[in-house]
Image: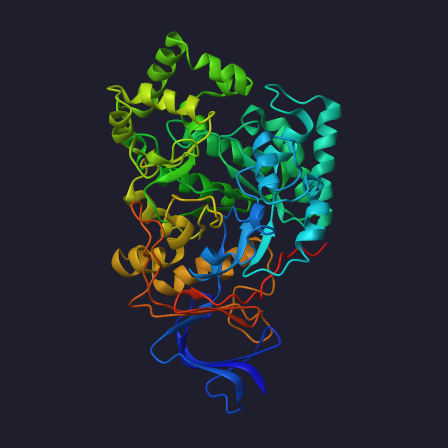
Length: 522
């Protein structure tokens, strides 16, 4: 007897090929049989008549990894059909732990020992023992490594420091990490240059690891930033992924994505192996400080930055820089979402926040807010063209990602991508906008990231593959969360199966934990 039989479904098997109707049998966490008619019985039968059956979605760009010990159900992943996530992106990973106050606060809040995060091998050895609602794999972050070795030093590493960083990469790869991620828009990765990056990427490549990059600039100098990363891949020999491909900041940059895709195509024609990932929104989400303060300012200690921000001449210089960079005097394109010391401003645009603070100038309000919130704070930035998003969605080497973690008790407002990314792609970009045909989009969500990240048993509906499966109504599936109400549920997602266990029914998590933290085969 099988554990589960899915009957009468329209199957898109993840290859990008046409659909077919068949039954699927699941046994012991694996797809045991795919056949026109399965006559045997099962403990649980699902009638998928009128529904589409696909491999479970793979979140090719996730930040769930820091929460696998703290929020292992990963509710927001499975409730949008994600059965596997690729974490550790944008240069940040749970380990190695650098001793930063933010990380210590986070760990202390949940009662976990910092020693768990001392290196990737220690973290993974523990994380693998904790059942998960969805599967996770992790990259090791260059920013985390650099901070552990060099702190926030604004310089190139010494030879000894570079060797220590290489040792952290080697430890991670031997522990089963997928590869190495760069976060060149953030401290302290923004202080690195090509020789350092290439040396570390080469270590990951020696183990067959993938190298990803949040590139140095996604605005005026985005082409140069892509070329820089391609040079790192060229020198290291690594397979690479350009993270959340976009051209943003000001409208003059919209449309540049076509040139970026051409650069990636030329690199592949040259013999490199390069991909990209994309999320389905016209706003990105990140901390306030990296967006509005240059790297020279961020090289200072927190105490120095707080004092500098009180000076009128410093404020005036920062204001001039940002008006020139973003091409506008106002900050109505910025919507705050996580402001711990001033939650009354969460979910509001900066223009409204300025009025609430009694400020005429938006930047004066922003600087006061940064001081009030100890330089912390997250926001959504509406600086992306939807036409660009559509173009990248249709790009043959683009995978789908959320660029998001999971919900947690202290999180009140957040980017809706945390809940709605994959249903949004299928409902708004496939069904409504026609940015990509459904079979091809399913490939971008399943077998393509499985191949890029060497997940040999995932991404296809085929006997012998892991029983990670989504069942949905392709005519109804749509995201619910938006920038006003980020908590609304998705629609049209009937079942999510992870590791042969039914993880979600009608878009609601069941509490089953059929997933795990997976390590790469050494």
